[in-house]
Length: 95
Image 1: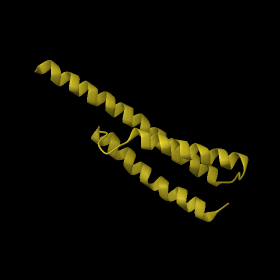
Image 2: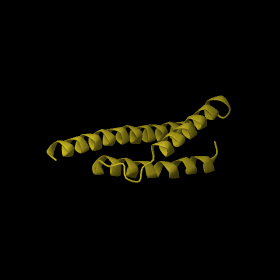
Image 3: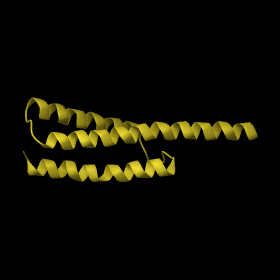
């Protein structure tokens, strides 16, 4: 197991709870990019596959945790889009 890889994954993982919290509480996707989130998911999936095939160790758990957090952020992204559309439709009715 590489300590440097583990620290890198932990460092990346520290950002996701804040991102999830901000997205959930603000009910907004301002500053978010769905494509960026998808690219990060692909990266984590590739890291997981590498760990499973070539270098199976405990860092795999960190990749999975980070992947789950990014997938959570993507789910909140779609929830926020639904809220935005609902609010826009509601405004149109009152005009």
